Amino acid sequence: MIKFINREQLYKQVWREPFTKLAPKHNVSATDLRKLCNKFLIPVPQLGHWQKIAFGKIVEMPALQSYKYFSLRIKKKKAIPKIKEIVAAIKLAKPIVRPPKKHKITVKNTLTSPHPIITKTRDRLKSQKPDEYGMIVSGRDCADIRISPVNYKQVLRVLDALFKWFEKKGYKADVANGYGTYIIIDEEKVQIAVEEKAQVTKTTLVNNGYWTHTEREYTPSNKISLLIKSYGGNSRRTWSAGKLYTLEELLPSFIDGIFDFVTAKKENKIRREKEEKEREEARILKKYNLHCAELEKNMIEQLEKQAKDWNFTMQLQSYILAVEAKAKDQNKNIPIDTFKWLEWANQHLDKINPLKGALPSYTKAKKLLKIEDIE
Image 1 (cartoon, rainbow, N blue to C red):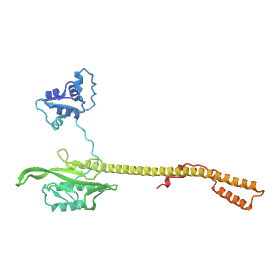
Image 2: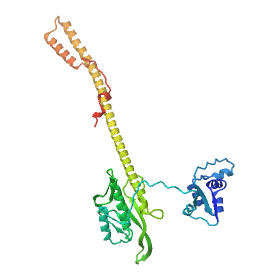
Image 3: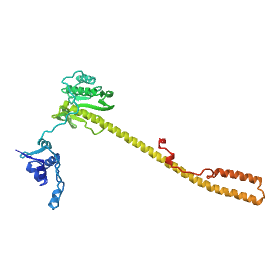
Image 4: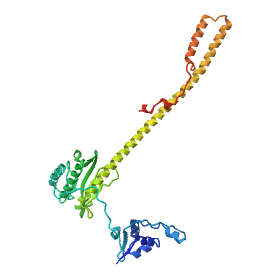
């Protein structure tokens, strides 16, 4: 017998009594019941909630968020030990409408007029022998494929359709430098590959007298994945065929993933260039400010030197005047030699006098020095 409850009912129940008491009524564990609540956005009491209730404290009960189209069913007699089984017990009140595929791509039933890369890859795979995992590997100058012999023809048809689709849109499929398969979009390279996982089918414990080790036998699992192998960004990188989707049905989503990766890569490139530009501007500004500070320092040093020169000039002028006054006191007319000395001394005084000529002026260093002149 299956008991159906909706989210609102479960929401009220988990706030009425603890999980440890509620879960046995539905024949599930407290952990699985909590996971079910998290899965369907049902708020649950936090740690210490029931202790607060026991002491008579008032605890606010959070509102239940909207989550349409779902009702829950819980098996009354049989416990549900795993979250996967809980998810399988969800009954859809209305079917989910899937959005239309963004890209339309058709994979032919037979490989006709294959892409040059696919032709080379097909010829290479035909001559390959399975490795210890039961896989054949394409190798250099070919599409990056690691697949079981029984599935390689399907993969070739899928990649052939993929390469032709991109080239029809004006992009390019290439094997760069003999290693790796790339889709090139607006000069951005995205490395892709197809891989099939192997599974362990037999383990043997081997004792050679000195130590014991385990030998494993592998066979192909038929779980094939389309991969983005390029580094950078946080975009999705794996599309695996299985019970829900075939490899052919995954192609539109894989194409979306490639474009998303290129977009993220471009955005990261623009961001790095912006950051580099900002760092360079900060470096130049710092250097510019240092130059301005140095120029201001030089002007202050020049000011202090002029003040010292002016003091010395005043002392020198006083001395010259004193010599001239003494010469006049001692003689009616200043002697020729003394007169020549006074003339020479005054000429030197004019040269070193900082106030001789135009008055000093001040202009900020940032107006004298342009930031464009800084390298």
